[in-house]
Amino acid sequence: MVNITRAADLALVGANGGGWVAPVGTPAVNSPLTQPLAPWAPLGAISDNGLTYGFDENSQEFTPWGLSSPFRTQITKSVRTFKLTVWETSRVAVQSLHYRLDQADLVPDGTGLTKYAETASPVPDRRAFWFLVIDGDAYKGFYVPQGEINDRSDVSFKQDEMSGYEWTITTYPDEAGNTVYHVDKIPATPAYTGS
Image (tube, rainbow, N blue to C red):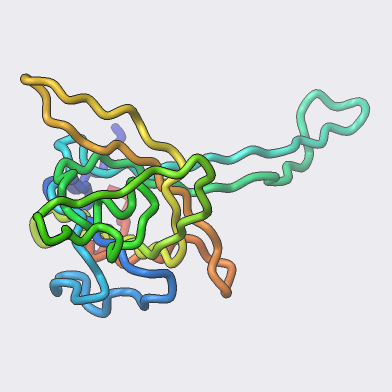
């Protein structure tokens, strides 16, 4: 009889977590469980849908004459994305991201009003991101040295629904050619004994 090996402590539930944004060029957070300091700015409350780490890949298959299966595959596209919905839509860092504005453009005037306009010709707005997913003592951290919101959902204002900004953030390679840096704290996998 086969003995199925399982270890609950090697499974991760996205029980809690957070996100931060900073200008491109901001180094990664040194200690994942330490509160990120300026220039990192918190994204605030994230919806209960949590964070989705996406993979968008395409490949080209090469099948030689006389075979019905490819004997080589070449990756032609490999994009990493992060999806989340932020609920604190009045937070300056969040408004800055959503409307592609500098945070200095969102300072209230002398009357307490914040005024800004949306351009018909948006320009690229890359930022650094830090995401942390926590499950008890285990965690996964994702440092994105260059990311940009490339998809925004509609925003609803309803009596029975929390307004939020739903974003898809696309990652771009840094000078080293990397798009996402991972920092994980997970228990060691026990040695397989065949039983």
